[in-house]
Length: 266
Image 1 (cartoon, rainbow, N blue to C red):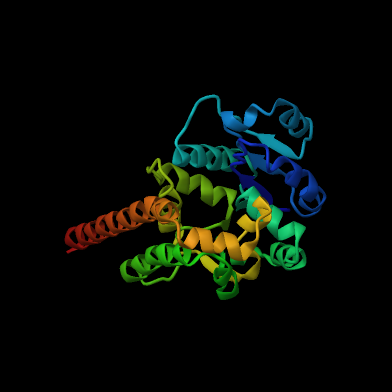
Image 2 (image 1 turned 30 degrees about the vertical axis):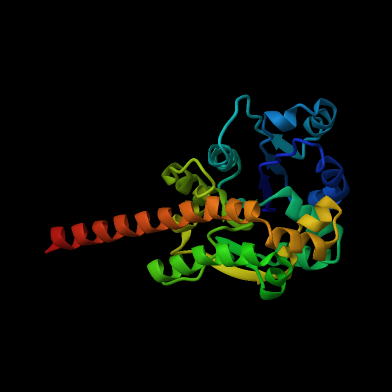
């Protein structure tokens, strides 16, 4: 079965609508459909949304109230998991990353990685390679790397808990989402916790930093701005710290559960 895409599609200023049209032929050639969840701020672009609604490639789950980012993602992932055939691989990703990969030099590499996946590879994190990380601002890498380090100390595996692109069979996502409780962005780390004993990872260059392309900015200049921005560092910490707290809490619960099982079996 061909895979499907799942992405939130938050585009309040209309920047991404032209990109989705530009990459649509590739999406339709390599994916069965796209499950998307536009919030109210994106639904206001009535004309562009009507174009997507008229295309049966898209299954749209609109949100008619303001949700936190974690609630928004969880709603989308649960709806997609419940709607898709159980054995369908679901690519949970972001439209700006897709546009960057498909509209530039990484197109062939991205499509080759998508088409090469087998059932045995899943679930899978496509994580940023060394070459991809070098393109990102250093504060992004340092702060998100802290989450990976904490996870390694707690669980013995080096995983990208602040992932950009994961692939999960619908049936497995259906089992995981009811377990996810956080309503902020740390819920993406919570998802990996429940998948971590089965998940694989693959480093890819096409997860290089997408912002200069999407914003039409000089990459060196924008990187320097972000690295020297206190607000940007705060933004990264605002989701990384809750992720680390979440992983620590879940590790403690896991230890308690193992101890309880050991006591009951003795």
